[in-house]
Length: 368
Image (cartoon, rainbow, N blue to C red; front, side, top):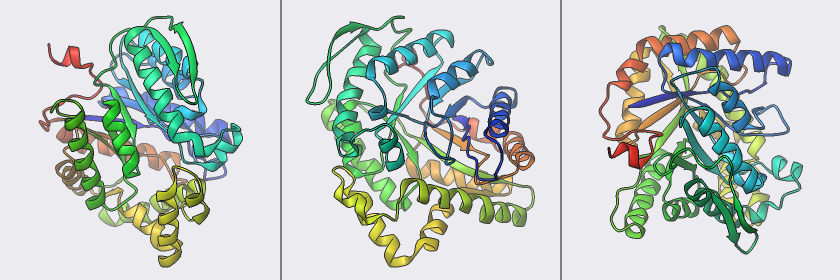
């Protein structure tokens, strides 16, 4: 099984942004010597929720600091980008890393970010579809073009031309059922970041698989990747204390950044699902939602962490995990100890699991 780690660049502890960046780069530098299979970063803008506005730039920097690990975006939010520039940046990353890039894409949810980019949030689903079609085709052919409703692009060369095929190494975050249908049609895998009960996640994952097989002549879809916020400690009580403070801190920051409690999201085209979620939060309370979101994440002794992640693998039949070890205002020394203990006691056991699929390997190469 593939197991990566993700930086998060979250600043909830009143540090300078420089201090956060030094720490997160240091965590990323640990990934390869500790045995992780990949390094990831998530794109966000304009507040302290997470401060990596240019994922391609960060991963290209990490490509020069590493030799083996794959380099993944978790995710690049397509409506905030010029598709030509994004295709070029991904191609550069793949060349300088000698084919180690994994492309994660999404359509975005944070209203603060759409406002900051002067982008129409209600157009995000249509732009995601048109941009992703153009970008994925460009990364296969070396040419980008589109005659879409919102995106019109004359045929233009991507240089450097693509290093190798991205088929089999593109994943998309999908929370709403409608998005999962889009991902199946695009032929990409799913990146699962737990935000809903696991039974609903599994039901939607199965629906995606059925749609994928129907569209792609009974071909099996890529196995998903699951991202987890992890608190690992030799002492179970200490792990619970980390969870109560830092995972709940992350969960509260996610609620605030995404405005999960804002029922007005229901009035924005493509975000009706989140309006229903906000009504549920109003019914049960913010603290209940924060606790629910936190409890979807992973905590405990190394054995408990392994058991919980094994359970998630069985539920989703995932091909890989992405662990996040620094978040929610966690002190930097605690975050490093968290990651080191996981790498020593849990990582080798997960990597030894046979899951019948690779992560980040082009299908043509995987078949050889």
